[in-house]
Amino acid sequence: DDISTFVLDARLELRLATSTYGRDGAMAILKWDGSRFDEIMTVGPDDALVTSPLHFTRSGDAWHLRSSIGRDKAALYRIDWATNAQRLVAASDEADICDWLVDQRTGEISAVCAEYVRSAWIPIDPDVGCDMARLELELDANIEIVSQSDDDALWVVCAHRPERADSWRLFDRRTGRIEFLFAARPELDGATLSPMRDFVINARDGLKLVSYLTLPPMQSDFPPSRPLPMVLKVHGGPWGRDSYGYNREVQWLANRGY
Image 1 (cartoon, rainbow, N blue to C red):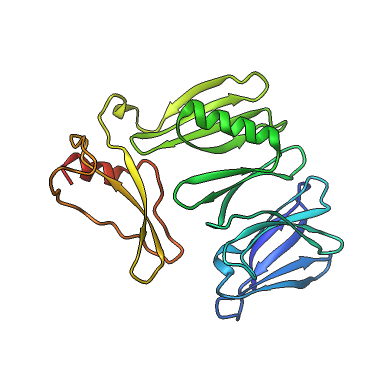
Image 2 (cartoon, rainbow, N blue to C red):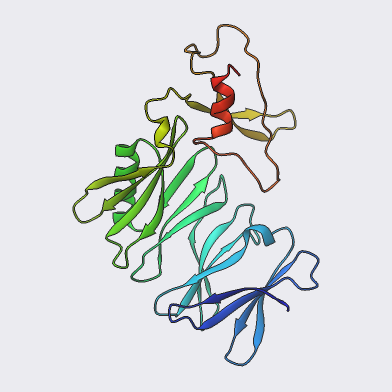
């Protein structure tokens, strides 16, 4: 009853688990030795939301951890199974590491993503970095790799843009071919949707507020030549946030002049 999550390796063998029992929001990372669990890491309540064990390498000699312990932003680490030695894989000074891409052949991290104003991919593998840069350029969008073939040669890519519903494509890394698969809202093809502008506002207390502004589609001037009625959507949190991209509620309000 103490266990909240399990982590298996590529052979589906139990290796790690997490527990939140009786710790007032804290979390423990546990190592399975074949007969019992040993606690190898205690995660305090301030770090528990963005600290968790991720996955093992294919060989099973190391596992990956996203952690904000001892730092302001969550980073990605590679941890040796035998020695528990940690090696920093990637970090960002602006935001938590929020997504990552795994080489399906080895289980190693090939790229990570940090979202401050917009999502930004940080390549670990130079070839992956080149492929992602090409996808972002040709699709003119923020991209997300949602599926990969076992040999990592084929990617299913989701393209995110504010003025267009999400769409998916098949990318062949061997030939460079990008094939359209489908869109989330094909009935919106040809509809006039509004772009989104990103801002970082300096608050009175000196902190910075990442914000996004969407104007009515008929409003071509920026800044607007006249005052417009405005709806302010404030995200929950503090761990929640809004993002740059298609938002149906925002588009609905902009279409009606807000």
